[in-house]
Length: 243
Image (cartoon, rainbow, N blue to C red; front, side, top):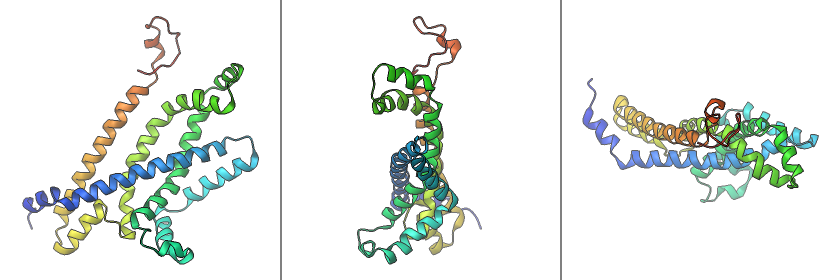
């Protein structure tokens, strides 16, 4: 059986595939934003001096890194309404269930990324800021966090790209994202090559765009090498400034 280029082109330009692709991107971005917020809170617990807070943050990371994301989605979508009657209403959509599931799981990974980034900032930065009279929360948000973001950007970008591919798991809870759209067409026509190839092209284009954005952001916040800084008047060797 030959490859039907007309069918492939029609799928590639169809509104159904475009909607599925936009839904996948929206889910991935929203989940990463929520995961970063929750992960930041968990990361602060992980580096807190209080043993209970540290144990609580560690338990969160351990639990959600230990169980499959697919199982979390099934628990939220299928078991959730059985336990919480409020989830049986129409407002609880597959998109919302997927958003909750992906966010809480990804938060465990983002917590480790952000924890490592926060710990990468030299302790002398903390001491110098406190010596200037800054309150602890100002030390965190004005001194430590801006430096930690530079370290966290590359792995966070990789997590966003991975999250885009993980959205295909939402097909099990009837969310019509990109891969589900392709599978629905395949189930009618049994033309695997054409429809899966169309989905493949969409993933390639979206991931390529995300990689380009990641590269731009990394270039903006990259650390200048000591050799290059030594050539810039007024900067001390070993300092770090945005490009």
